[in-house]
Image (cartoon, rainbow, N blue to C red; front, side, top):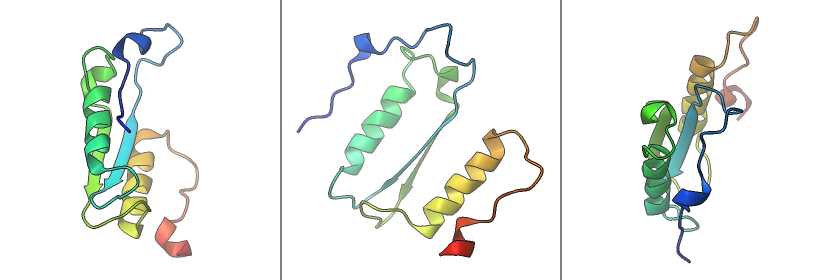
Length: 101
């Protein structure tokens, strides 16, 4: 199956979109369900000038060596750190995902 991103169908210049749209994406390098090359293609598409998502600087992409189609404690920690950076401060920070594993 080929993964294609229809550039013409995704004109995200709607006035309802926020001026800043942070996106976090993680992908395992040994994912046999969705090959890592598709994750890279999505990353590149999200950073493309056609979308104008803050010039692509709000797109954080990380690959996890040896990770299959799953999540790892390292990935969950990275996601938690990213959420703490991009979300407004809360009165109490949630615990790290590792605390519940």
